[in-house]
Image (cartoon, rainbow, N blue to C red; front, side, top):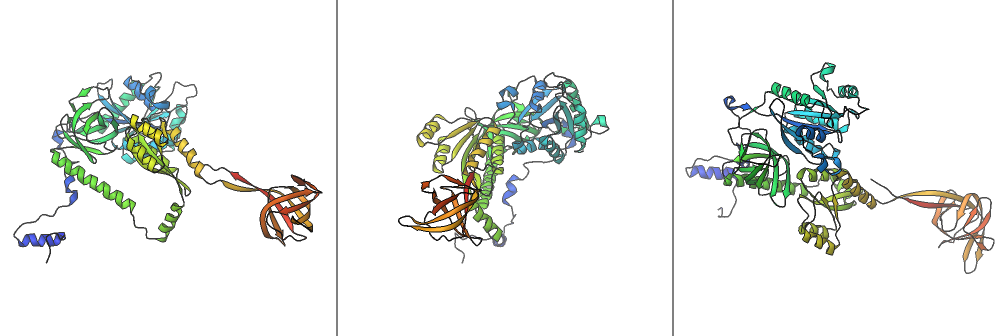
Length: 551
């Protein structure tokens, strides 16, 4: 007999239900997400939409300056160290009157995931290459991302106003990566621009309009909105703020939205100029207020009919996330190779860190970069990485695990600061990712055991052994080569076999104690706690140097 609390499998339950005269429909847990995304639209409802253009390229090639020149704004001055560390999304009106949405991505090597996200949501990639610098590692990576996303590239050759600018070199270098520009008989549009002199910006916008016309971009604005989170952060005054790019439908204030494992009701929509809007159509980037938690950058966002549906979806996703984390933590180690790697990892020195950043993308980039520093001997262990200011719970966690707290573009709350002072926890603030990585690298290098290197000093041969009362045995030697120093490390070699390693306790010339004896001279030697010396033994004298290692 089955008791009331017993669990029965789905097949048995189906049989019992059918016997009792019911019809059964089997469902999976993942069915809650059914119909959330990608329901097809009828062609009749599709209207033209603005193109989404992502600006990509190597660090310091002038991506943000170019976008500033197009927008007549000044973002660069607000960025630490003059390098972009966020994804920005802006809408601009081209001279033809067409709206264009721009997404600006960071060029620093650490932000690979951010750039990949930028390429995913885009229609056209503008590849910015500096005419004085040519094709660089992140330029190549941007080409790869654009290819993977299957989007057309427009090459913007920037900094042509510089004296050492060589646009021809850029065109030739791009050929190696199968990007053939129009002037060399290829398909890819290219424009020579200067962000500082505002040269040819209209030509660039025309090229974008032309490419957009070819792509014939359309979307249905009269349906519930769908989009992607480009960046997310925690604002102290406004709560979780997500920059969302609407991809189809229209997002309105009051809509119930789901993004990743978070949901909320849209309280306000703010455009890139800081104005509040009632709705946002396809290709419009807006800041959305009203999420109950910070969604992750790259999450897809959809409008749902009811709060109940939103809760159902987010609870299911939260559960999945927890299960994945649990599976990762307790993976059954079975093979011998796994056990070996576990033993290796057990001997590793760890550098615990608590990281807080201003936006999700930056935190993700920092964690990924620090994980790349890990070696078999030393590893950075990120105990917690989150978005928002440094709180008391972060400091408590750091205190319990002897970790260092790192704030990237964020500050500690007053209570957290005083708690950190009491507990003696170090909070370090950074606003440039280079400096943060360099400092962590230096600290981790300090945990590495130093390399020991022997430096040979000289050899001596024993001619006679004297027995002296109160001192013990003293060897009368001649130094054959190099020098012998008191306090140095010595090896006693008999018939080419090392019989003793130790330190030299006494070194005498005649009756005087001396610091060193050079080749050709005779001296008396005694070892610390070793008496068995014989005539004909060779004494090898050496020093051990400790060399500091770095990652």
